[in-house]
Image (cartoon, rainbow, N blue to C red; front, side, top):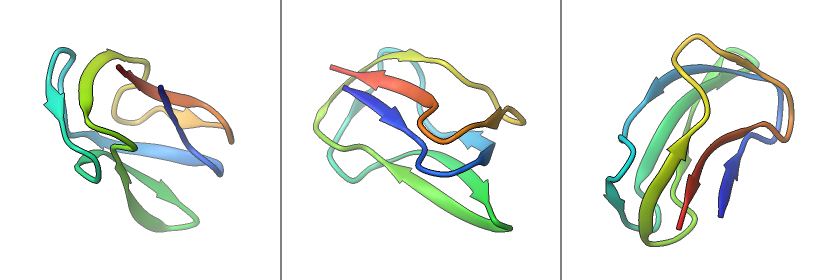
Length: 69
């Protein structure tokens, strides 16, 4: 499952690494949108398969941050 942003955002930090086991609701990344920092929660329990962004990246709505399986 892909984790995507819903609005234009800037990646502040990535809180997990590829291969990490995550639980539903765990913070995966922090993004800033409209001058507010938002935590991106894990949508399900699983393992981080890939990370597509890095801190400082500017994202368009619908951009994939990472994939979890």
